[in-house]
Image (cartoon, rainbow, N blue to C red):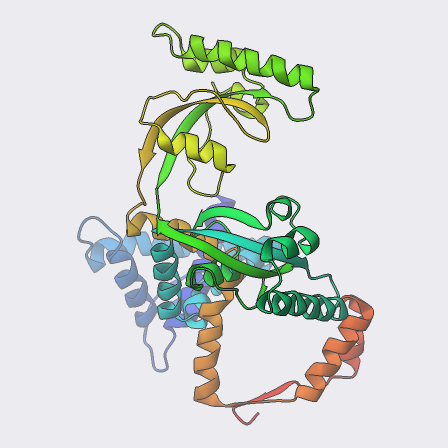
Length: 408
């Protein structure tokens, strides 16, 4: 009951604020609180569209009075003064503000761009330089990345530069080679650069949240979709030569069992696989596409027909047998767009619709910035290494204007 009252009070507070007009006649009074004609009309029209059956004003009146009684009871009990109410109320206000703070066309464009990239895969390489934390460290890292890029443009071997200087311990030994990837697998700025880069060319230095990258794309192809698989693994990673030989003998024996008509691959994986994550699920792995598994595993899985079982093959982890269970193409736009919106909300793109809205408002109202004061704040934060309460207190005590909006 308390949760219902809090919810009703939040909605009532917002609805009343939005419905008030001058010279608005009072329709009724509930708990000494007047209800205007415009407030009743606003809520009636709003709720009528959400009802499965037609709702007349007369039939809605009883529902409305009960709703207002809950609000009156909540106010009488002081719920509107509690921290829980204020948080709930602030959340509703934020939900109402959001559409006015974002450019919807900008968000739609981002969704369409990623959905288009999901239909292709690029064979990418990169050299990664860690940015550091302070402005001076980032500046030094960017300068170093620029120097490596220039050396490559002047004839240095890309793979050798990657092996010597890249911070990515997985790809550096392979000359920076990452393999094929599709949209939605890497940070947005990296993805945008890789998918727009002509084959064989070297990118500008690309910044992602933690690093700078020099990217080269070797090939581009239509996306292969995703596959669903089970597997049995016999580990060789970290094993002695004798143990590795024993693992090879074991996987060969298991393969003969796996292809026998009477054998359950699921049961065999549960009993024999060395992969602790998937063995208890009968060897089941999540759906995956290009770039999500090591190349040998990916190639084996995509080369199979559904229900088929691979011959034993080796990866850096050990020896595998894979059974392919299914295959699916790229999801329809309506389905995929929901997941894309979730990804956008977690990466750099989440700021773009809001930035476009701010650009629109900036043009509409005019903004003058005080760059000297902005630079002073940046230098103070850099010197302190972070914006803490002590630093904030200084700027509160000695405020400096950063911008003037609309002449104010």
